[in-house]
Image (cartoon, protein in one colour):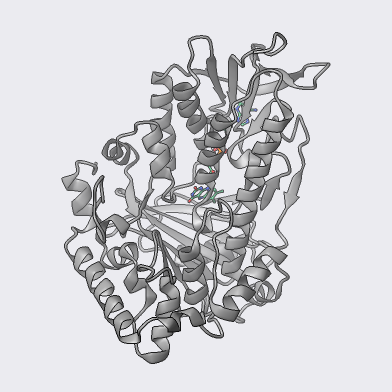
Length: 503
Ligand code: FAD
């Protein structure tokens, strides 16, 4: 190490919501070197946003990284399994499809499965493409099985994530982080001190007058972006012209019957409603565009479409869609809502936090911070946000609904060139390519395109090079194997009970 370079010894995490406690759990586990201190500051008076109950499969890697026992985690968060998202009324009123985790079928001779399926449709009836996804078939039957190490196909093709209670999740992470040595300070931050020469944040001051100094600050302060925006003015790229929903009302209800192993998103007149079944209750929320619907109407629609009595009054959560222009500025890294927000349609926010933490650990800097490492972090986060943004916009653009001003608006709106190019490639020959390290792969794009009735003009002619009878037989065998495997699985509540994961 050069003389002028020193290690970062004091990491200060500002905020104790999901982002703050996730960061604390990971930093106290992977940055501990005997000298380094991890301090988290949170304010009980301010509180947390307290929503965020559905996740995507990469959370399994994050949990494994932290040696979290899955059954203990599910017990503590009253969690359930999630095999995908069911979309209702999105393409057309009355339409429904599942966006499953995992993939569709098996490629044959390197030819993508969906091309074979598209070809089969022109000759016979290969059935719904969902019948070729292990996760989709299990979801439709309400069943679950954990593949575990060494599992063989088709069970090894079952991909899953979790639904959980967001406040119990934060509590679980806090216990873990404190056990690993994270120091927690309670109090409202009322002042920020900067270093005169570098402009870096040197310390934060609490209402009590206490000063907490640090080398690196993780801004997990929620939408307000206390350090990254209010202090450093990193700037915000607004995407609300593509994604006009800007409010949510959330209410829990009692879970009726066995919880379904999937999230449901039902399109409404100016937005959509989520249903997330947990062990002890169901999370519900209505996400809507205030330019097209007032709060009273949004609340009325939500309350009229619940499966049982609401257990609390729903509060309105306003949000702005877009991302912080710089996730990392000076010695401040924004994680969570302080770094940007995309509506929870594909449950991506907690993933953004976990991905940001993993990226930070992979690029953990010395003092002074190298601009190269900082830029690399910002580049990666920008790509992640933009890829997911395009995928979310697809759900709105790919609609045939014209029954309300909101749906007419989103169907007609301009979209990013990157998305327009992908839709056109699909329309020509059903081609989908996963680009770089993007989060959502071919199955996700195919699920939404087909689910919302965007059909290619023709399939890839390379599919014609395989013998039709052999392909039909292979596909029939795949479909039967998924069905057989799913039927052998227990209902998910039974699985949770048998695993000791039900509270
Ligand atoms: P917050 O929870 O707001 O925490 C901010 C923290 O900063 C708090 O501890 C607060 O006390 C502290 N703080 C702020 N100012 C100060 C100060 N001056 N002094 C001291 N402390 C301070 N994500 C998903 O992955 N899946 C979902 O299904 C999902 N659904 C969502 C639905 C809605 C309607 C919304 C709005 C979000 C949803 N999210 C979802 C996103 C998810 O809720 C957030 O990503 C997650 O909760 C992280 O929030 P946070 O920790 O960044 O912020």
